[in-house]
Amino acid sequence: MPNYLTFLQRATFLILIVLTTTIGYAQTRYTQKVFSDIKVKTYSYADTLMLDFYSYKKDTVTNKPLLILVHGGGFSGGKRNNPLEIKFCEDMAKRGYAVASMSYRLVRKGNSLGFGCNCPADQKIETFVSVSRDIIKATQFLIDKKDKLKFNPESIILVGSSAGAEAVLNTVFMKNEYTFKKLPYATIKYAGVISFAGAIVNANYITKNTAIPTMLFHGAKDNMVPYATAPHHLCEENKPGFIMLDGSYTIAEKLEKLDVAHTLVSDKEGNHNWANIPYSYTNLIAKFITESVLEKQNIQSTIKVKHKN
Image (cartoon, rainbow, N blue to C red; front, side, top):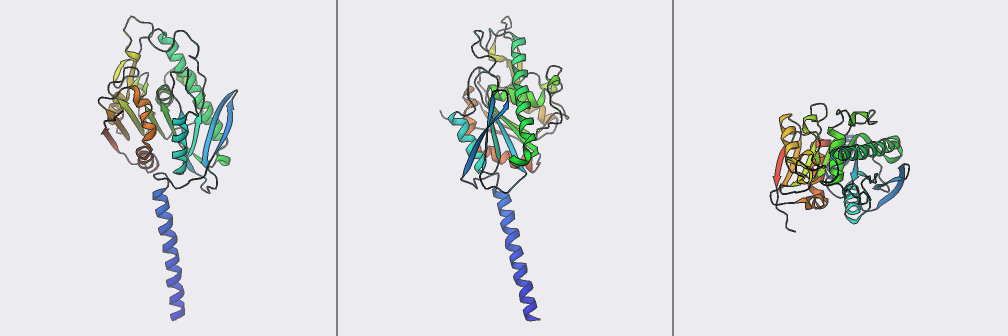
């Protein structure tokens, strides 16, 4: 009998060690850096459009969340592999996420009208739709490779900066608007969206059916992409590029009314620099994804910050 009890005690002890290790790992992964050896592979997802896929070389987890990063640049510039984008992707991949940084068609590149007040409003809408189409194509390409890339297609989070932030917000929330409705969404559903100084065409399209956990970074004095509701680039009403957009504050208000998880990170003195600043807020971003997206906690908060340039 004593030998039998000793065997049971040892077995129980071993099980407790395994359970404790597994629980501790689950609590650490996705919030803290747990890997160091990250690999990057480049794919062509549509025509000449490329994306870089970041992951841990020896990861055995096959259902990890996927972040898709969409860079900024006024729809005329920017790159998926600029230093800020690379550092962000590597940081998040070291926490155990699958991460893709994508290029998209720079439809305003070389256009003398730019993307400000001289660019006609209808061309702005066409630009938004164009990039949303590329985001959807990139998403579908990755989903088709989900087994090889080892991620969960039900845990895809879009992340965007500036123009990319406008693109990801429109892709998620405007899908029932008639111009966006024509896009090949198929069965794609995003689990979360994170915006660095972004806005959408019309917050009224945020409904119980389209609302998902959302994180919004924005400076209240942004004169390019409105913090609340205002003209894009603060264009005057008589300018060709006059178009009203709903920014982070308005989006957060709408999500609060719908009782949907969201976090607004607001700098009352901040400007459009908040298109780049959040790349360094990876701890806070990882916390939001873990709690609001993966654990489905209905956290609704506003975090007031003051960034020193």
